Length: 238
Image 1 (tube, rainbow, N blue to C red):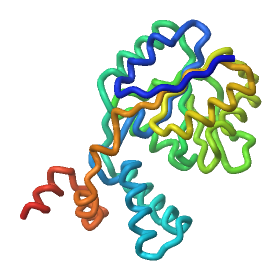
Image 2: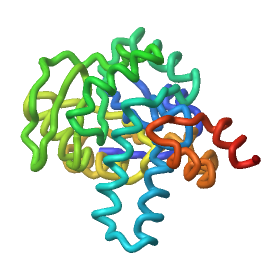
Image 3: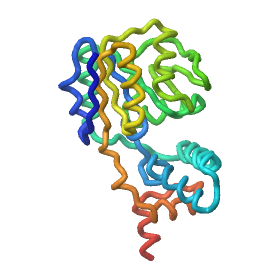
Image 4: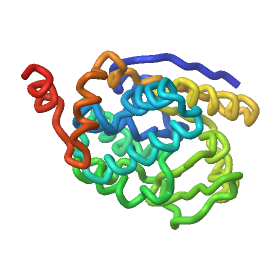
């Protein structure tokens, strides 16, 4: 069965691959939404972990500290869509009755917050897979709710297989959009062994070139208040 992975800065680049047999999967962070400022982004999180390790923390401890701070920021931050093309893509999917699923590494305790964030940018109905909320049988805690799988610390392919098994879902073709290439490879391997046609797109519109470590440090110093990038930049220049 064929598999194909490519990258694009335009989310609508995927449209030509969609057909009536498609089961469409969205990542959430840096695919549908991102924080309105540097701090709280995945790029900031990786940078924060490196800085903590430079100060002597182990990767595990630095990751725990980073994740705790990330969750705190998510409760206060504004979010935005990556580009307006997402609304045209969602409209296309709805018009053609394509089943859509969210697949995120967020923990289950962020489910309500996540849907509140999506609602703020008019994407609360982006997922249409209609099953009652339920826990999934994975090695670590993992939940399905309102059309999205909250994987937590489980690999995304493991969480997706658990969803398929629980609900007797057997797609002929999967399309998956994620900003992280390793997640695309996870699902590619799963699809290959399950003999499912697979298209993966690494979505790079929200990339590391936007990240400014100096702005991030200023914003960290002002937590729990969240400064915009412009506000942090003005403080840097004074």
